[in-house]
Every structure is written in structure tokens, then in C-alpha cells.
Image (spheres, rainbow, N blue to C red):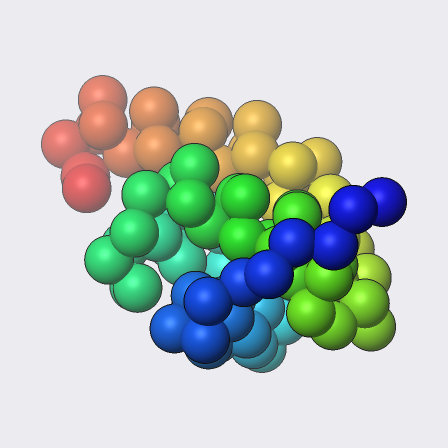
Length: 88
């Protein structure tokens, strides 16, 4: 694997995103909204850049992302129900 130099401001964002995901179990979408970046940026930060910066945190984040991926059909169903019941 080729190591890529990550700018200090980007590495701070990557670490902050990882901390947020680990502490809250939040989704990529929620993290993007919280930090003002796109889902694509969050995903790249957490799947590629974080591995180079902090392997232990990367492993923990991967566990959260896998769980969220496995549960996403449930969140989607809840959102659809709420939409047609006049909820959120």
C-alpha cells in the first residue's frame, strides 16, 4: 500500500469524523451533515485516509460502517412509513 501525505487540516477532519462515528454509531450521511462535507468525502476519509493515520480507529470505524450498512434497509423502511403517515 502506498502511503499518501495527508494535509494537517484534512487529517484533523479525518480524526474528528472517526471519533464522531465511533462515539455515536452515526451514519455517513449524518457525519457529512454534522461536519459540512459530502457523503463521498466522509466515506473516503473513513475508508482510505483513516487507515493510514490510525489503523486501530479505522478498524473500529469499519465495524460501525458494516453495522450501519446491514441496518440501512430498516432505516429506509421507517422513513418511508413516516412519509406516508404524515410524519417526518
